[in-house]
Image (cartoon, rainbow, N blue to C red; front, top):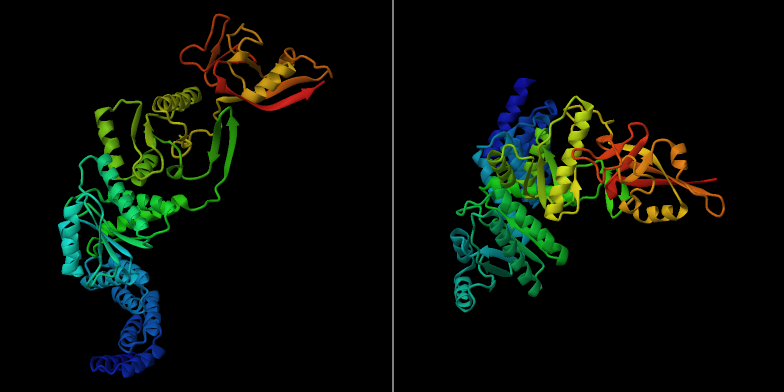
Length: 526
């Protein structure tokens, strides 16, 4: 049977070479009937189908070929060609890229990928092509494709207003209505560079809105002769375009040179990151309101949190890498530079890069087997973060559950206790409205410090209640952050340095901060 298959294959190849494609298809089909698991036969028949203008059949054979042998590079070439001829350009591009992952140096696939990308760009027929006039390569290419009228119109308008967006009627081979020429200059300062890229995108958008255009195509500015950071350019252009799309309904395309797969991959990566951020989720959350703030627990991804500050720690290499990779290489460089300059710093603050937050705080923290030391280290970490947030005027922060991963710290370590607080009815109304603020300091005693008193003994707290006209008494069950506590005395106006509360070392706890206790339940009884 093997010899019969080889004879049919040889005859089919001869028919193909002689441009007798129908005969070739017939012979390959006979061979496949004898050996349905031969990927070469499906690949060859796919090529014959393409020559016979039967693109759907060619695609089916190419897919079957790859199903039988997923690392067969020629199969990707066949599938890509069929998709390209069916004008399914995006799928063709993806197919060629998959093939290049297997054989990165395959010139046939690379050239076919370039053809597919050009076809996709041409097919899009965008209303506006944006050109960075300071990019000599792009400027010359567009003017060459547009013809003499484009260059003449540009020069005429440039003389009148060199710093404005120059809008020129497209001509020649260009598949657009208009060309926008914008001046732009790179900068070594990443903040200035980011702002200039945002302005470039924004100015082009506003001009398109003014002219009632529906679609616009941008180049990846700064990634060629200027040598700008690719991830910074991609992240900034995509996010600014997305921001402008919230204001104006305009379709956006980013056009990348076919040979710059590194730029294409980074733009694709940044788009995926943005999609992940804005996609709806079904994550588990729970929250509690404390005075004017909210404490929320979310089962999710910290890098996607829309807060002012995201926290990373020195102890978690995995977390630090996840944050810096998502934020971009510039953030990682900034962190390493700060760490080298200040190796003993408790907190290193860096810019947010591609993340939605305003800043990232990397805090020095290490786990400990001693639960008391571990408890205090967590309190100190939170205190350090809060102090720095106040100085920067930030109002929201996302913490990871530190120590609960590879370090295996106990999740049961708790700085919070459920305690009782007895009071008159009038005081209960004030507490429900404004929590346990310092106006209640000393009301239930000052023996263990001048603060707000709580007890784990409900009978003791009962002694501070007063019956109302109906004989009803009020007592709160409160969540109290006692933290690290020490024995108090009547001379203490606040907790001693290094401690968070004072105690009688039995059942009484005294707090000194307004947000240290939360009235969870009001118990009314007789």
